[in-house]
Length: 111
Image (cartoon, rainbow, N blue to C red; front, side, top):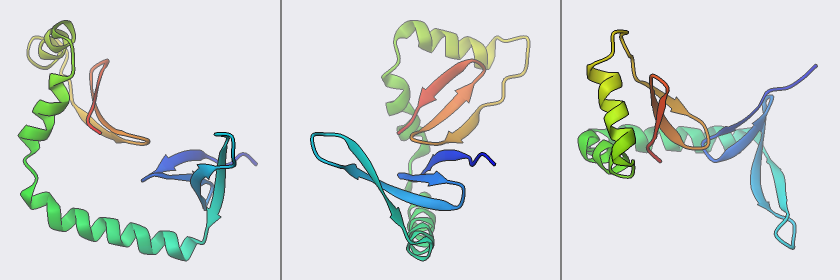
């Protein structure tokens, strides 16, 4: 049976097991397995902190900073996808090794 491999909040997740990235010398990557109890504690802390901080987050400022890194050509494409498209475009937040928003075929990296 094949297990799903993904990054989740900075940790490598294979099936139900979590691994922490590190190095094995000479710059080679190595992963150390973490106890699932510690991972659950960490995820609980992350959730609590994020919940507490989200009210003070200026969403517009974060998005403006992320969008300012795009070239004018891509900004125009993004604007057209949001306002001038014949098809309805629904932006969606995606979580993996970074957080981004997909708008049509454009991907705007946030973190």
